[in-house]
Amino acid sequence: MEIRKCTVAESKSVGEFYDRVVKFMDANNVNYTKWRYKIYPSTGYARDAARAGNLFVCIDGEKIYAAFVLSEDPEGDYSKVTWLKNLAVGEFLVLHAFAVAPDCQRQGLGKKIVEYCINYTAENYRALRVDIVPENFPAKKFYETCGFKFVGTADLGRTSTGVPQFCLYERNL
Image 1 (tube, rainbow, N blue to C red):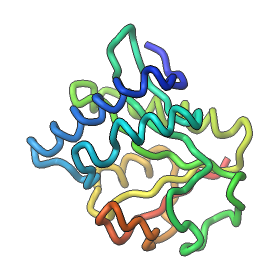
Image 2 (image 1 turned 60 degrees about the vertical axis):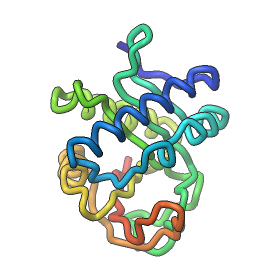
Image 3 (image 1 turned 90 degrees about the vertical axis):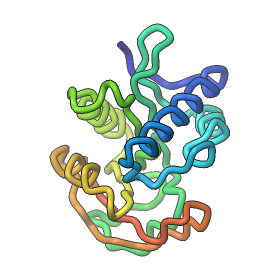
Image 4 (image 1 turned 90 degrees about the horizontal axis):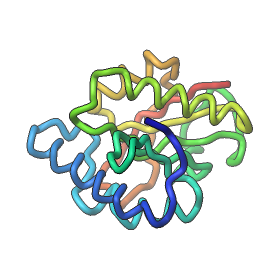
């Protein structure tokens, strides 16, 4: 199993992976992320992230175990909260669309991937940030156990998501 950047050619498979994850969450009434099937995260989102060099996969052969985006783009207005470190865009990365295959959850894979993200970020940036839907209590607890600190709640101006507020977390490096 390896964690690596995803190619544009592979992005369709990652989009299909996200679709499967969202369908699972919806079917099991555990869609704490408020992700919407074929809307976010979607094949188009995966393609665009791959083109920008920001899409990553945890993969073994053809099987995708996890996918995520590491980007300088907060995909919203991060200035609405007081961060632990006052950093300009370009001095931090944001973890977006992090999903682990349902059959691989609660086995430590998510923590290994976040450790990868922290190490990757530490090479050229000063912090790793993440925003979470307020009702996503499992994610909030998970990131706190990974050393992230809650910094506040804000409306990021993401009108397309239908989620008005996000809880913002930061891991300084």
